Length: 444
RNA sequence: GCGGGCGUAGCUCAACUGGUUAGAGCACUCCCCUGUCACGGGAGAGGUUGAGGGUUCAAGUCCCUUCGCUCGCGCCA
Image (cartoon, rainbow, N blue to C red; front, top):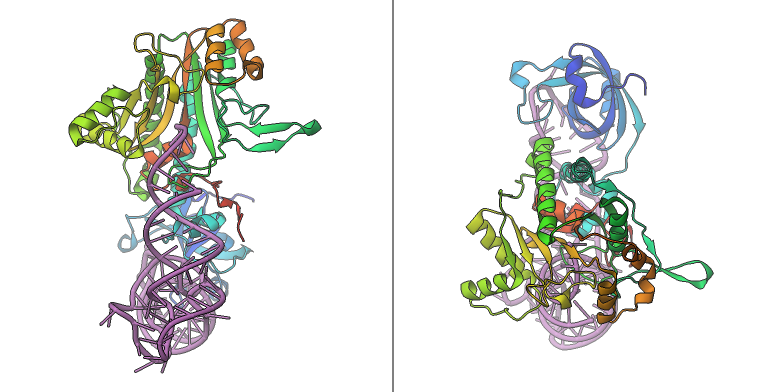
C-alpha cells in the first residue's frame, strides 16, 4: 500500500494528510458525527467523520467492528478539552477525508474484548486472538522467546534445530504419538529434544533450542497441553547441577528484565506484575521441603518420591513470604523418579543432581546434571528396563568423549502463564492442542 | 482413567422451597442524536432451557440414561 503510515507513528504527521489502514475496533455513531477507532498491527487511534462530509458519513454509518478499511485523513492534535490521557494516541485524532472498505466482516460472535468462558474463547480463537488482552499475552510471549535466544547467544550458546519426528519412544514413557512412517515403520513425535541436545554438547559444548514437543497424555488440567514449546539448553564442563541452575536463573532474570522494559503497555493491559526474582532464590532438597511441610502443616509426605501439586503451591507460598521470591528450586529427586540419563549424587546415593524450578505454584523447568560416562549410561538404561540397542545412535556421542554436562527444559507456555499470572496455560498457547481440541473440535 | 461442578437467546448470566406467557445486560435490526472514547435515548426481533426417557395435576428446577464442557487428581514442562 502506497505511503501507508503505521498508527504508532502518526504523531510524526500532525497537520499533514496520511493514509492509514486497519480494522474498525469500535464505531460510535452520533448521527451527524461518527467516531471510529482504527486498529492496525502497531496500535489504535480515534478517527472522526465531521458533519459536513455527507458522502463519507453514509459510508461510515455502514461500517461495523472488524471491517478492514483504508482511510485518507488529516492528523490533528486534539483540542485541550478532548484529550484522553487514559488511552494510546489520546492526544491526537484523525479527521477522515475518505474511506474505502477493503474487507467486510460478519457479525461478531460476541464483543471482542469481553470476558467469555474458556471453551467459547478457544473455539473462536481466530477472532478472540484479536482481543486487546490476548494480543498483549502473545506480544509478551514473543519477547520472551526473543530474549531467550538473545541472552543465550550472547553467552556463546549455539542454537540448533531438534527433530520432531523420532525413530523410537526414547524415554519409554508410553506417552508418545505414533506416526506412520515409510516402509511400514512407525515413527514417533518427539516428547523432548533431550537426547539430541546432549549429542550437540559433544559438538558445540553449549547449545539451546526452542523446540515443539508432543505429549500424548490425556490430562485435563490448567497447566497441561499436548503440544508445547520447550525452551531447552545444555552446557558442557559443569561442576554439577548448581552450575546449570545458575545459568538458568541468569537466563530467566534476563528475560524478566527485558519483558519489564519492553512490555509495559501489555502488563498494564493485563493488569499484572511480573514474578519476583531476588538475587538469591531458595534452593532446597526434596527431602528438606517435605520435612518443612511436615513441620509447618503437620501433613506427612516425607516418604513420597515427588511433591504433589498442593505441596508445590505450598512451598511457593512459603518462599514468597519467607524469602520474597516467586521462584524456588527443589533438588535431589530420587533416581526412581528421573530419566536414565540423570546423574546420581555420590554424596547422597539414590538421589539425583537434578532440580525442578517452581514459579508461582507450578513447576516451570526441570534440569540437572547428566551422566557423561558411556558405560555408566548403558548400565542406567538397563536398570530402567530399556534396551541399550535402541539408544545406539545416541550412545555414539558418549563413545567419542563427552564432558560433564547438564541442562534444562522449560515450558514456554507455562513460563508465559506464570509471568502473567494467567489462570490457564491454554491462555498462553496460541492454538492449544488438547484432548478435545485440534483447531476443529474432534467431537461433533 | 478416576472424582467434583456445569449445560437456559449469538455472548455473559438470572429464574426462592417444582407453580401463569422463561427474564436482564451486551451484540443484532430500525429510528433519534455535533464531541464520544465500552457514547447515549427509544422501539423491535431473537429460546424445543444440550439430547432422550421417567416421576408429578404441573419440570429450566427432581430421578435415570447419554452427549458436551470445565475444574481437580495421576503424569509432567
